[in-house]
Image (tube, rainbow, N blue to C red):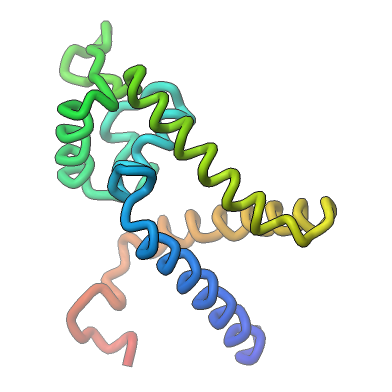
Length: 162
């Protein structure tokens, strides 16, 4: 692929990153919960229940970070743990009533933000953006799987990013 196309793509991704990071920085929290807690709530809401190992894998987070977040969320009555009947060592993580209200609030808030973003576009353009976002997210997921075993650019000077 030609370098000017790659450069244009990288520039577009940086612009998206700046927008998303500025949005997070401006809000400080995601409707009163941390960024990690927000993503945990959204995944549980989407799946209805999930075990911690699967949650960590889906979010690409270390299990210890997920575990600490879950502890706080249990204390704040946003989620609870349910023992699995076939394996008592594993527990499903589910939303409590308060957690479901918080997830609904986040969904409503984010839907209004993105509705505002798309307000200047026609339906066909919005569909193209959404389809492209899905393709890009899938591509990043595949790339993450391929590169997670690679030590390239993960701290230190190993020569690949010079």
